[in-house]
Amino acid sequence: MKKIILSLGLASALFAASINFNESDMSANRINPADGGVILSYHDSIKEVKKSVVNISTSKTITQTNRFSPLDDFFNDPYFKQFFDFDFPQRKSKNDKEVISSLGSGVIISKDGYIVTNNHVVDDADTITVNLPGSDTEYKAKLIGKDPKTDLAVIKIDAKNLSAITFANSDNLMEGDVVFALGNPFGVGFSVTSGIISALNKDNIGLNQYENFIQTDASINPGNSGGALVDSRGFLVGINSAILSRGGGNNGIGFAIPSNMVKDIAKKLIEKGKIERGFLGVTISALYGDTKKAYKNQEGALITDVQKGSSADEAGLKRGDLVTKVNDKIIKNPMDLKNYIGTLEIGEKITINYERDGDNKQTTFVLKGEKDSSKGVQSNLIDGLSLRNLDVRLKDHLQIPKDVNGVFVESVKDKSKARESGFKKGDIIIGVGQSEIKNLKDLDQALKQNNKKEFIKIWVYRNGFATLLVLK
Image (cartoon, rainbow, N blue to C red; front, side):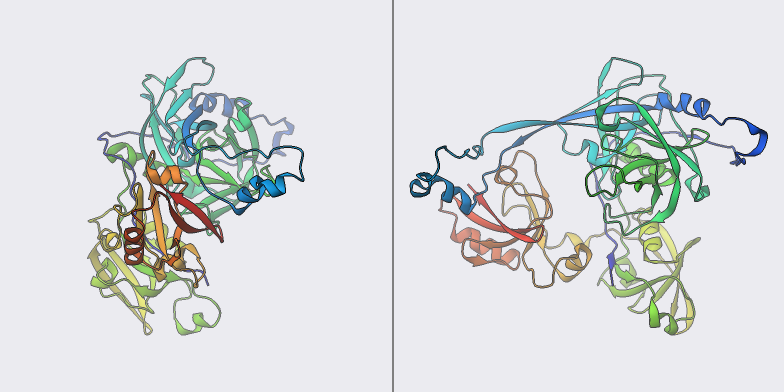
C-alpha cells in the first residue's frame, strides 16, 4: 500500500508581476470524420499555435567528481598492469570542468515574453537561450521561478508583441480527443505529432510529487519537453513532460501537465517567483478491499497519520477519518486531496468534510505552512548541503527500505564543496569513515572526529547501492 505525504514546495526569489492569459470562450464542438466525405486537415489549427512554441537551449558547467572505486587501485597496480600492454584511462581530476548543453521547448504565454516550460529543461542552467519560431535571433532568458514538484518553470525574454497561446479548459477533456504535440524533438527543429488522449488524471507515475497527467499516444521525444499539447482547435491543453520508455524512444505513452495546472502555477510564479503551498500534515491512503466495508462512503482519502502541530492536528482530524470533500472539490482518492491542497496557499480558509465512525462531519480552519518540517534541517554541517533526518514519513514517501538509516540530502548548492565531491539531491548519508550514521547528531560527531583529515570518506546510499564520496 502506497502512502502519500502532503508537503510544502518552495521555488526561487520573489518577482512581483501579474499576467492575463488568453482563454478560450468557445465550447468544444466535436465532429464525425465520416460526415461530408471530405479530407480532414488540421493545418489551419496548427499554423497559428506554431508561433507560440519556442526552442530552448541551456548550458551549465559541472565539475568532475572525485569518487573512488576499488577498480581504480586494481587497474593502476603495477603487478596487474604487467599483464596488459596498454595503460588504462585515468579518471579526470576533480578540478576538471565540463560544459553540458541540452535542448528543450517552451510555450509563450504572454505577449511581453513570459514562457512556460518544464523545470527539468532549465534546472541548474547557467545560461538559457530562446529561439523564436521562424527567426534566427537568439534571446537570453531570465529564470522567473520554478516549481520542481510539478516540473514547471517560467522564463522571460525581452521581446514584445509575441504570439501568446490560448489556454483550453483541461477539465473538459475527454478520452479519444484528438491532440497534437508541438516542440523540438531531438533538436531537429520544429515538428508536430498527432494522437489522441489515451487517459486522464494519471497519477502514481513517479515523475513528480504532484501528478494529474494527461496520457497521450502523440509522440513526445527528447527535446519535446516543455512544448505544447494542443487540441484540434490549436488551444493549449497541456505541457509535454515525459514518456515511459525503456530505450528512450517513444512507445506511445506520453504524459502532459494539464493546462489548468499550468496556468495556476505559472501565474503564481510570475506574481511571486515561488510557490508557497499550504500544508495539511497528514499521511493518506486509498480505501481498498475490506477497508471499504468499514465506511459508508466508498470514495475518499483515508487519513492514516496526523503530524503533531499541523493544520490537520489543530483542526481535530484524526487517524481513520475519511476525507470526502474540501471546499467545493469532491475527493475521490488520495491524489485528489494531495493535488487540491497543493493548489492552496498558506493562510487560506478551507472546509473539510469527512466521515468518522459512520458519521459525516465538517471542520473549517486556516491552512498553515509546513513549519514543523523545517525543524531538524541543517545546512552548516557540510558546505553546500541542506540535510535532514531520515524519518519514517520520509522513508514512506520516498519508498526507501526500512532498514536504511541515515541523513537525507534535501538539496546541493551549486559551486560548493559538496557539489564538487559528487553529492546529489536525494542521497542518504549512511557512514563517515568507519562510523555508522543514523541521524544529524551522529553526522555532526563523526565530522568533528575527522575534521583534521585532509580527506573525509563519506558513504551515501544512492539508487539502492552504497557509494563512496570523498570530501576535502
